[in-house]
Length: 530
Image (cartoon, rainbow, N blue to C red; front, side, top):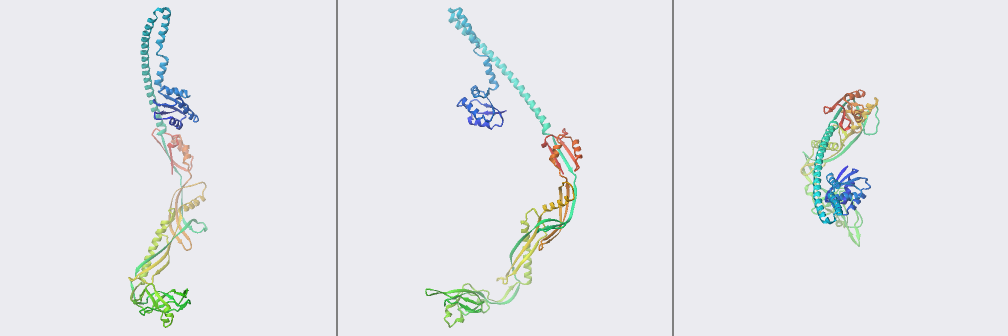
């Protein structure tokens, strides 16, 4: 039974909620003094109606008699705590008006016999009634004090008895249920197995004969990078300036063919020649007005030297049209300066320069590619760091350097590694071990060493020698064993172990020192095995 305290701050709703939220089916509702029920016993009717479906038994107790009476009227069992209830019962048994009633009956007898002394006898009876009432009150107080002292002694003895009983129960529970603990350690018999042979790593779905094979995966990374280097060689050169010229046709709507090496002349007489033939499209005629057409073509200076590094130039004439109407209608424009004209010594890369930058570029790309690949491979995959395929796809040295003699080396390369799941290899080795054995086995522990990897990335053929040292045991159900040893002594457990062929030995430890058998509670038993 659960006791719920109702204080002055509670209302009808909170009282009902406390009763419904209590998990116990029997509730003692203690209502403190001073709590006002506005609707009187109707509030108790409301409480009873609300908790009816919960089927909870509610008993009301209070030091206020009005609350107890209202609860009883509503159909609740109700009581006053024993001190007040005893007082109420005592008053009911010994009414304070008993002596007065007694002397009133004597008064009636005297009225029949002595009518003439009626008023005098009444006054005498009143005085005698008051004296006897005081005597009864004194006796009542003595009885109450005696009863209260007896109750205090009884309560004290009861509390001492309950305390001692609870302490004994606590010690008993501690000794028999809390402290006892058993540790059972079992050593299982093991079977050693060593595998030392070649394992094939398959990229494609190919079959192997008498070889353990696992599925592998090739990871690739493409690298592209440009390296600058300073050339150490020199040579004398005479370079002609080159550029792009825009040719205009403002002559007619017909196109005009210009052959290769057609000359274009600057205002100061420098000649540039076209590097290819070009057909200049015809001009557009709109409302009688000629709108020039244009086309671009590459030109080269007629002579070497820096003086031909010119431009922009808005108009270059075509000497071949001189003396004809086309001379003014066909012309060229250098929108961007020409460049490359030079006479003198320039820096050129030597074979040693190129070999050095090649080696540096390859080593850099190889390292970058390897680091990138290894960082991207999932952690559950096995990869061999020293097996890495690196292929150069393209290498190119720039034909010209800058004014400082710095050239550019461009390299494109690809890195490859192969990886596989080691757990797949363990599964394959487990299948090989179980093939020739009866019954179930469990892999207890193992160690794998790899050697002599052979990787042919071109044909996707990979293999590695595997040394697999392992220990195997029969399956062991620790929970089932734990249930079978509950309540048994150490000697009984050892006899039980003798009938288990897969167990080598067992160690049993009890705690505290007085415990000599396995507790009956599962949580007090620890079973470990190896």
